[in-house]
Length: 292
Image 1: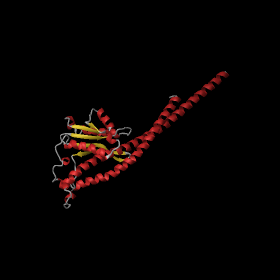
Image 2: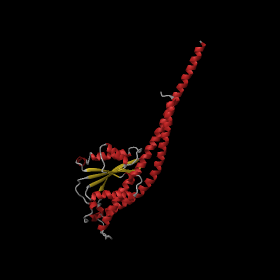
Image 3: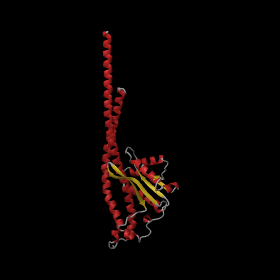
Image 4: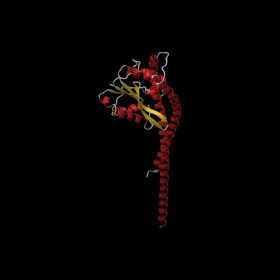
């Protein structure tokens, strides 16, 4: 059994750790509220923009030359992996990295083995995990995930769109954690390019409309805008999911520290009682020796 001084030192250390995890939990809870409100307000706009594109899909067949909606043979693939720059958030980063590795050794195995698959990183921690597995990224945009702003995300999205329009890549996927609630995230693989627009049979039964400006112009403007919004939403989803995962992880760490302190206090009391009992036995033995 450890001596009393060692147990007291451990109790003091665990209490300090509990204070840190409790503070981090409260900070993450505050950040989560802000990030959750932002993504909740963002989703209806992104959904409505997608509905508008779907509404125009009946006429898209007659429009040629939109590079982002073109369907061409897939020769090269780019995976855009969105994680966090910091840890202490449970399996948030490792789950995205694991999903990426599963994609590389699963559906995209032939592209990876032939050198036709690349990785683009948003977030340092996910990149560290992938690099430890021997996967090297072609680029990193780590600052984008710290405090997501539309201008910054749109700039990165434009660079990714340029990679597609220049035909360097024929398919680009996003891999990230989608925010569900503070306790859970949805691991998501999402096709970014080419643009995939679902066509509803109901749209074919609707009457024709006169578009002003022209349908061609509207689609040419809306598709790049929708791509920027889609990318920004993915980054915001990831940030909200990160704060939720960190809050949950710090809550569990605080509870574990509390339980460990309780166990250490019990061990300390037992050790203290044993020490007192030993001292009493020594006193009694000494007194008996004096009598004899």
